Amino acid sequence: MINLAPRDGELYFVENFVPRQEADSLHGLLRRELAWREEEIIMFDRRVKVPRLVCWYGDAGAVYRYSGVDHMPLPWTETLLTLKERIERFCGRRFNSVLGNLYRDGRDSIGWHADKEKELGPNPFIASLSFGAERLFKLRHNKTGETLEIALTHGSLLLMGGSLQHGWRHAVPKAREPKTERINLTFRTILF
Ligand SMILES: O=C(O)CCC(=O)C(=O)O
Ligand SMILES: [Fe+2]
Image (tube, rainbow, N blue to C red):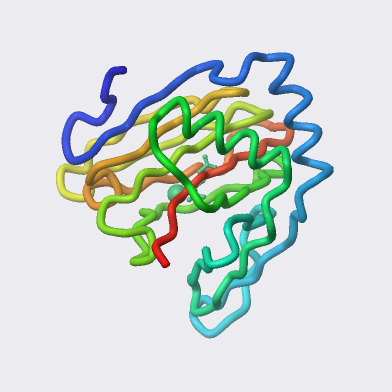
């Protein structure tokens, strides 16, 4: 596979990791089966809703702390476990948790950030699986300012590793044009 990051880290993209028809049914299944919820974070002393729905699943000890709150994982569903094992076989890495994001339409988004909380370890390896509407994934290098753009298509798998989270930030911005729903699953390893 070709590393798409020109410096500081590893970035691989696998289009059609899940074939079209299967991706269609998985999208529906994940939509119905996962415990999607609204989430509020505290920003500048105010409660604000994050602009997407989220859910957190994983091994019992995989507690994820962010925005000052401990997030307890829900137990794996069969669908999530099967997907986890399929990605593990593909990339030769293990995961113990998954963060789900549901972008209801083109106005939902995730702002610029790096996934480098300390419970992810020094160089986190993250596998990101997408279903539904195609959305743009942007990366920006912290020092050079260079940018990369990847269209995250239905059934695609994006792998981030090495020092990528230290060298770069990423975002899924609001779309200019109307978009239907999209589900993204980021499989992670929480150290505990
Ligand atoms: O939706 C995506 O493709 C990215 C999600 C993301 O960056 C995250 O959950 O940390
Ligand atoms: Fe992220």
